[in-house]
Length: 408
Image 1: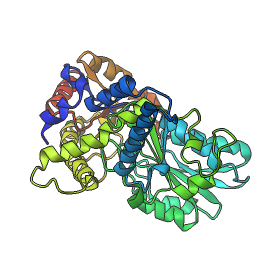
Image 2 (image 1 turned 180 degrees about the horizontal axis):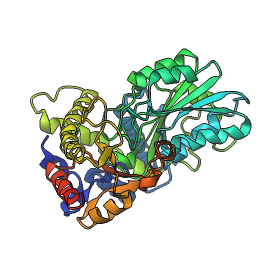
Image 3 (image 1 turned 45 degrees about the horizontal axis):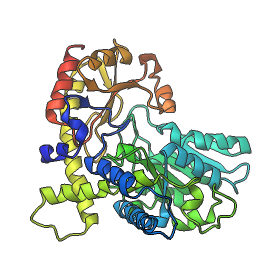
């Protein structure tokens, strides 16, 4: 990977600060900032009017959402719901999809998930739904499909699971899980927030019913996306005004409409991945954008695994440190979101020292509260988490390791 080319695309990387809290929020592409500014300057009107600028703005937003749909291989942009956050979109989904569910129906959640994909479902217990918890193996830190098979039943309406844990960094076999879920006639809702910055999302290949992630963790603005299979979205009750029809998708799930200027800025993200491919593979530019997305993410996965390997090699060498997750850098099993605890030092103490080196990492539960509790990690003050992305450098990892060596 030409890391110099990559870093030039992110204006914030011009300063000397080291950004390694990327699972909390990545830096934004300069092209996206430019598009947001362009919308404010030239297209800042209400949509749906007959005058020229309104019509132009509407067409440009349609093109932007079309690019987003193609980016995740959605069959069409009607299946793309834009909202302010993954938490809000999942809450809207839980309210709408559960409307016909009855007392005694079941929802399965995992104890590895962020609360965004937990609380919206556990709150349904108030209407008599039964919540089952799919628990991670505390030794391997894996969600085992055999355990899911023991939990699932003909009463299961939905399984909510993360594609990648924002603490463990481990990648779950979503296609396999979807097959198990669909085998009993249930639906699957996937939180892809911690996965989408690192790997290509293909909602058709995964065969998911709903998939949610946040753009501000995928090099964009503070906005989120929910994909849903069109028949399911049409069949669900919406949350917008009561005069909307069932087929008014996605608008019926977007009360007050969506954020126009930030949505327009999203076009910069698929374009960046095309440029990433074109820069590195100039010998063949006559392939589809979808293939360019795929190969660009493969390049990222290979590069990020090298960063993770360097950091994990050091952390594994410190006998007082316990990695909370897979100890290897295998790109097929994990992303470079790396968490650990130290047997003699509390996590907040470690972060206090790292802050002095102008390196941004953090500690806590990261809203994966069930996981931190069940693994008995609260006594450490939560985990220390280092979350790398492809604009980080080996030199930055070396700087972090040097800072750690001054503490451990």
